[in-house]
Amino acid sequence: MSTTLNIPPQFEIVDRPLDTQMTISMGPQHPSTHGVLRLELVLDGEMVVKSTPDIGYLHTGMEKLFEYKKYQQGIVITDRMDYLNPLGNNLAYVMAVEKLLQIEIPERAQVIRVLTCELQRIASHLVWLGTHALDIGAMTVFFYCFREREKILNLIEAASGGRLTPSYFRIGGLMMDLPAGFERRVQQFQDAFLKAVEDFHKLLTGNRIFQKRTQGVGYISAEDAIDWGLSGPCLRGSGVAIDIRRANPYTGYEKYDFEIPTEPDCDVWARYLVRMREMKESHKIVQQALSRLQPGPVKADAPKVVLPDREAMKTHMDALIHHFLIVAEGFDVPAGEVYHPIEASKGELGVYIKSTGGPKPARVHFRGPSFVNLSALPHMSRGAMIADIVAIIGSLDIVLGEIDR
Amino acid sequence: MEEQNQPGTLSEPKASQENTAPSPLASAFLRDHPEWVSETTFALGETTLVIPREHIVAACAFLKSTPGLEFNFLADLCGFDRGPEEEPRFEVNYHLFSITKHHRVRLKVVLNEDDAHVPTVTGVWRTANWHERETYDLFGVVFDNHPDLRRILLPDDWQGHALRKDFPLRGYEPYSLK
Image 1 (cartoon, rainbow over the protein chains, first blue to last red):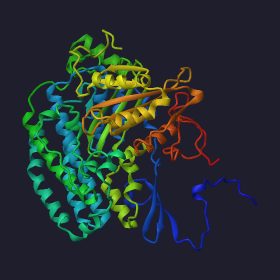
Image 2: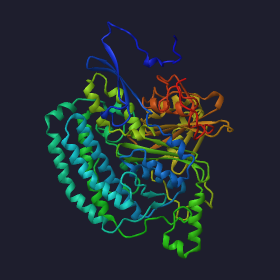
Image 3: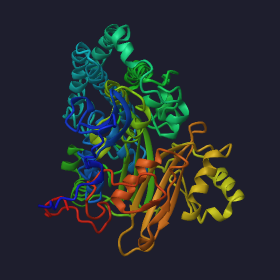
Image 4: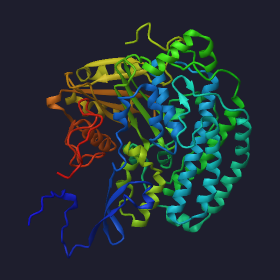
């Protein structure tokens, strides 16, 4: 009886009794692949001869969906991409649309954007740290990290109403101003956080098992890292001091005083140290943003794009008309194309928007840092042990929601 | 490209935040290889150079290696479908970034539907590998001499290319192995 199934060549079972190599499939349900990543590993004993990532298990056609939604409806889609850094995605998207519209947003909105994005970056790094350590075998760190992350999520929830999907930024400003007492709550978090980072260092940095598992593992030189398009902490872990916040400043980052941490070792350990130092830098930026917070409007003066306040809507005829038009029909964006990169928690998050006029974009493309960083995994894992693969994936800090989109 | 009565321009149009250097960049390119650039636009603070596809690899290598330009980082590569009634139909955009000079440029290749082939730039930047696979998967643009041109996001036996404008947003075809 012949089967009608046409088996793709990579799944064909080849019987080679004298061959010591074995092909195994790691994932997509493996807990250490951080989602639904599947790796096809060719092993020689415990050594990895070749690894081929297989992605797409979480593909939901988000870029297609953007083309059928109005510009302001696209913001909620961005939350679902890199779900550990949703405010960063919001920021990249709304800034790209603002660039097309050439809207200037007020100072207070910019400072709040920086403040919340840096808190989100810390939260994203805390998830990375907890899960990375957990993959390697250190369970305690996970609980300490999630305790701190919970505080940040509560802050984001207080500001936006959502913990994981805030959609806090709007085209032309913010959804609403910060709630009363927000600064005090951020300050409480700030006061306790540096102590928490010290705790993480005590738990991991001096830990000999952790050092043995990470040092010299997943080596990628600076030239290779640039060639493979690595960005963010992965690139800085190879000693390349590049940060979009400094290279192409946006949202007023040029006014903040912070350092770009780099490490010369090019391995998992270096990427670990870079992210640990980055959390402290983000902490510094949050502190500066707190001191820059001045009263003022949080929405741009662009009534055809930005929804009016409820009070104005009830008293002004034109505000009511604008509200109706924005919600019912959207707003026209002039034809053009932009590529707007920001420094997300995982690297360069670029948004390409092509507009041909009208209330819906013709094309929205996200250059996800996880997508590009993962593509270098075969290069980094050559000759590694199979257990090192887990450490390398953890050090890349991938989020499959962004890779598969 | 921008009309006077566009929405949202009630405040002053601001200069670009990106420190791109458009005119010296384009002029350096045009001086050395005028036949490589068929169109130059500068809008919204971004430089776009339209390159005929037979010159795209040479142009990328030139931009990467020329001192003063040093576009050693391929930030992004993505496709765009203008719609089935348009000719040429497809665009492939290359977003280049310079790690040393911090400037950016966009290269664009336009392709006809019946001949949607473009040479691969994986020889210039290895990161182009997955970007080109994604563009092939979602638009059906074939990158000639690509080392591993397979679908990446959709299953290997998927029919059609999902981001083309004539591909429906939703459908009810049951998925099965062909």
